[in-house]
View 1 (cartoon, rainbow, N blue to C red):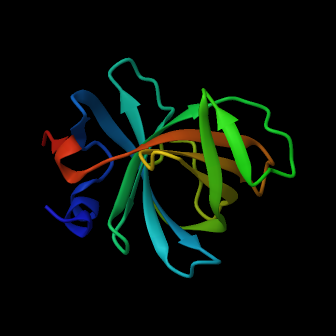
View 2: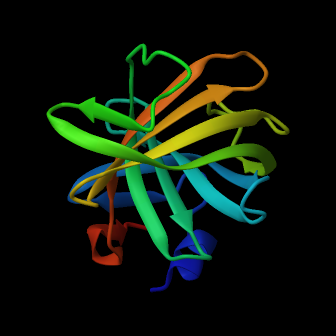
Length: 158
């Protein structure tokens, strides 16, 4: 399955396994990236206990994908070019302003038309990243600790 085929199949209520853990898609968000100029897809996932602080991103353009979990830390702004987190060094690789251009699923945290700022950091290993985000409307933080995935890490259950 390609990244674009995966995007077509993932809809709210879709059940899947990521690295053996079961999740249900709660929301499908299509973000327009103002700086990069192209969209990417993000999914709010819920685990079997009802916890919804998981995010899956899939980019059909550059075949990138990752699974993130929200974490809470008060990084001081302006954000530095390099961060130390859990004993690993991260370098800033991207910053972006994104706006929701399409939204499926009403039971998640996102609302149509919302916007966010993001600062992305890759680890030295290239296997994980930090995405530090802030809502344009509320100024609330949503920081994600993300592990990059391969297609064989995902199994659709229905």
